[in-house]
Amino acid sequence: MFRLGGDFLGSQRGAGSVLSIVSVFLLLILLVSAAIFVRVINLRATLQAHADQAALAAADASRGLVQGSPCQLAFEIAENAEFELTLCKVEGYFARIVLETRVIGLSITGVSVAGPP
Image (cartoon, rainbow, N blue to C red; front, side, top):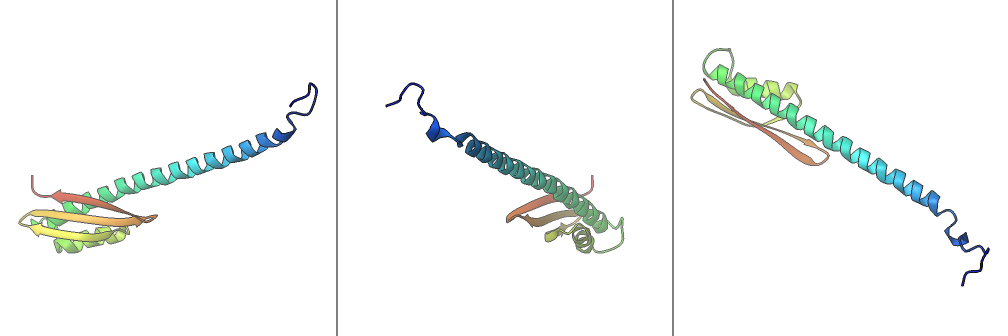
């Protein structure tokens, strides 16, 4: 039972500090998660751009517009960007390229097909 003028809030002393510390840690976890999410989205866009570039180069090489082997050109583009070329398939003048990378345990894939207009 509470007495008027008694110390009935004494058991709650310091609870605001604990709540503040927990709130700061939750905000920190949220910010780190958002940063990782943005990094993965940015890496996905970069990977797709390089897959497109490699497919265009391979298609141009298959048509004889540039010198070199189509898959070798695609491999060099992937290697320069530090991505792994997992598939290079050239049929006629069309090239299908699949690039892959891993970030924080996630596999990210970029697929592109290119050919003559």
